[in-house]
Image (cartoon, rainbow, N blue to C red; front, side, top):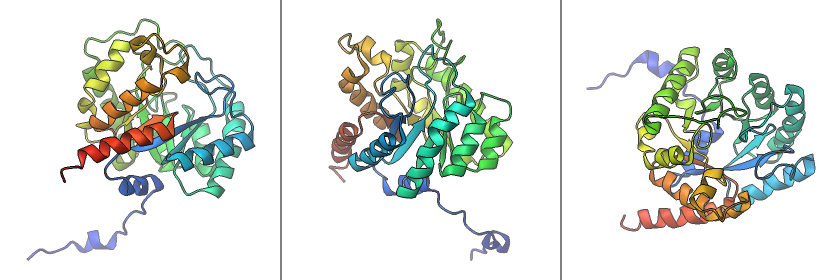
Length: 295
């Protein structure tokens, strides 16, 4: 006979987060995280959604097209980008998050490296802290993430956006990225972030050459085997242009972006960050149909 612990029975189950609910509702395919930049200088959609009404219309359209999560960013992290003042970043993202939260129950992510912006975003209604710096912008970032209790996407980067593409070097990119992300995740857990709230992102394009990015996609299992859910963001990035020189503009990289999304899904990614939501949803639907055809 199995005897259940009275102590365990007395502890209430943790409330399911919006992101956890979204994962549960999509058991057979990765979630689609849609990019919404309210910046003048992001590499793909900079300046397109700077005013509140335009940003809200775009967010609602992305949800209609099949997005599971909206990722809102107020600071460009493209290669060579300069820092945005904290007050300006807050002014860009906070009204969008507050208003969007009143209109949808979909998970909302804040794409920021700054703990103060993450705090304000969670107070405004965000659920996820998507940090390309892997909680490394300041010493207190892991403690802030723990206090917020939100899901955290720990991105991999070497250096910072302004300098990251200055001759990046790896002996074994997949192994080194996995090891460095493990260290960041363990540091977050030591600071009090719950393990089940941690996601890993290999940081394609963040301190990597095209060959490094391709190697990371090819060996995504090195990350997924660590036991944390993995998010991949390859959409419209410059390494796709290297694979096909015709993709000079970001909006000319749809084919490569979809290929990367499929490869990420096959490699075990549980969330894919994209610009082209409808096309990605269609590609993933076909992949899911093929994978489940024999069930």
